[in-house]
Amino acid sequence: MATQVKEEAANASQLSADAAELNLVEFWKQRAALEGLEPRADAQAYRWKWRDLEPRLRLAGETVPIEDCERRALVFANPGLGGMPHVTDNLFAAFSLYKAGETAPVHRHTPCASRFVVEGDGGFTVVEGEKCKMNRGDLIITPAGTWHDHGNEGSESLIWMDVLDLPIVSKLNLTFFEFDYGEAKADKSGAHPIATGYQEVTEADDISQKLYSAGGMLPLFAPERRGLTGNHSPQFVYRWQAARRALENLAGHPGSLHDGLIMEYVNPTNGRPVMPNMSFRVQMLRPGEETALRRRLSTAVYFCLEGEGLVEVDGEQIEWGRNDVFAMPSWRWSKFKNTGSENAFLYSVTDEPVVRATGLYREERETADGGREFVVFTSHGERVVEL
Ligand code: GTQ
Ligand code: FE2
Image 1 (cartoon, rainbow, N blue to C red):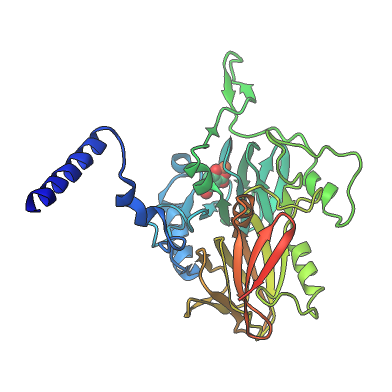
Image 2: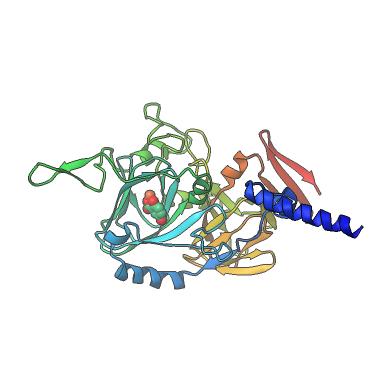
């Protein structure tokens, strides 16, 4: 008997040694990690206060010359993700500061990017030859494969929030960054072309917004495809004024039980999210409004434009106010409350479209009568399973 046990142990250790040598893994040794009962809960629900961010951004402005960094960004690193520059498992977000007169050189990349203006006017992004001016609350998208360069023509520093799907693109190992934009001007001698670092503006200012932002109407003459892939909205800028008006016009509407009044920025030609992997949203919570509990199989980053309130995540209350940012990981029970006396406006970006594309997106949520429902999303729409 004893010899048999001994022999089995010897065989097992031989097998482990052989497996390592032969680049094989014994499934039973990694089974627990492979067969997770639920998504990993490494990422934390976490808030960054504007009070802490603003002075550090200004310090970076004084300390780091724009030539040395090209894009002066402080990146949100979720404290549960081991120092990775990821705000959630699947999203990258940063606050960037550009001082008066500074520019960021032209480039393009496979991650989709966006900016949402926090402070300052006089900012612009040129996207595919179109100069988009940037004021507080405006959303500018630079989808995968679109050339873009930024600048600040104002007299004050400019701060915006960048959100990119970089962790998704990086996990799939699909990252290309290109800096060799073709336009170059001859130097003084005329002998050597030198890169200008910016795009020649070839389109009328804000043309994509003029073409596509009428709401319910589309031009019959405009090209819908710009950039390398065209797999995104042809409208590159979405104005805060229009978003705010849309929400305020609905102030008397009950809205959503789980989000209050919420609108999604869409590709006006097909009603889909503006870029393939991320959905951009803005919501209004009225004074005293409190939403119902829900958990979703998607992550999100939020930015508070106006007002104050709290988000309760797995029973823990996180307060937010003007210009604060918070990260919402996947599959946590959460609800919102406006604790102020004015309307609160939240901007958010979620990876929900990429989760939906896998066919795996799901929600669990509290119903109006206090029950629970489990929802899966099929190609035919929502399927509600009563619990
Ligand atoms: O502004 O184009 O924060 O390409 C990270 C990557 C900003 C940008 C970031 C980028 C940009
Ligand atoms: Fe970029």
